Length: 118
Image (cartoon, rainbow, N blue to C red; front, top):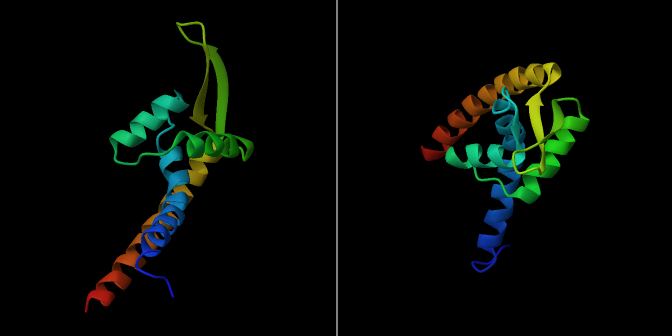
């Protein structure tokens, strides 16, 4: 049994698990136009989905390795290279499929949570 003192850490861990699954969908949904990592991080934060850099950049690399994103390096105006990401054709297909799955899961959970309130 978790003590009152341990509960905040448990809740934080459970919340992290819940968010991790949604991050793939969130990232894919925002890369129809190419963006570099920091601009993507800012865009997601503006939508109340703040992702730490230590989570975002490994996720971008993993999605690219899976073929869901494409990337290219470009020199920015300050002569510092930036890696730009864009969703790939396979990524668009995955986004559509994951979006449908998310909607179905969301409907099911809404029903379960309504039952819980009764």
